[in-house]
Amino acid sequence: MLVARRQDRLEALAAELGNARAVAADLGEPGAADRLMADLAAHGETVDCLVNNAGFGLWGKVVDLDGQRQRAMIDLNCGALVELCRAVLPAMIERRAGAILNVASTAAFQPGPGMAVYFATKAFVLSFSEALHEEVREHGVRVTALCPGPTKTEFGAVAGFTGNGAFDRLSARSQDVVAAGLAALDRNRAVMIPGLVNKMSAQGHRLLPRSWLRRIAGSIKL
Image 1 (cartoon, rainbow, N blue to C red):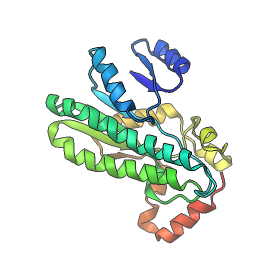
Image 2 (spheres, rainbow, N blue to C red):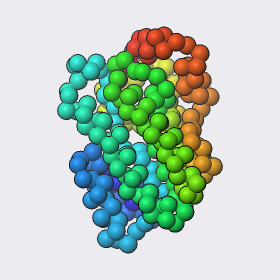
Image 3 (cartoon, rainbow, N blue to C red):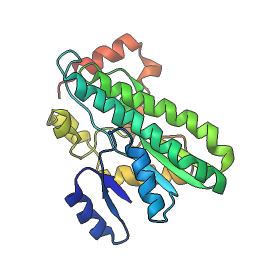
């Protein structure tokens, strides 16, 4: 099942895959997870693998960005993700089989002035996923937090920036990020950071004071 807001693009992808069903839904809306689970049940389907990839970011200072839009980011990036995990876990635990891939980011490892709420949501996803990994592994359920760096997607356009030279050069192909995430999920790795540069940047908190990290992050112009 493919779930996102844009029906036409979903249907095109489902046709390309050949074995997928497209469901148009805004997962950030209240009750969206419950409606999705009801749709699955109505079609006699079960969830063997959940990929929580829905989310968006916003570029700008907290005081300058629309408050409702920032709250919507929290609701989608964090709230919907938790609701979907909670919805599929009972059946997975009963079957003693299942997998959940939650897409976080290298942004999860440090504060991000200029994208404060987005960075904070990804820190939540990372922490939540690591804890969930420990809670369910004895039940045969695998949970991985995928923490990619810059990736060639529409993220930047939605967030409000088009990138710069360094950002573009460091951006990975989405298919490579997907492959790394699924491979880590197969091995039940709690955290996967694809790419050497991303691995090094994510460890900055071990080498530098947090005061330096937030100033460095705040100085990056996108």
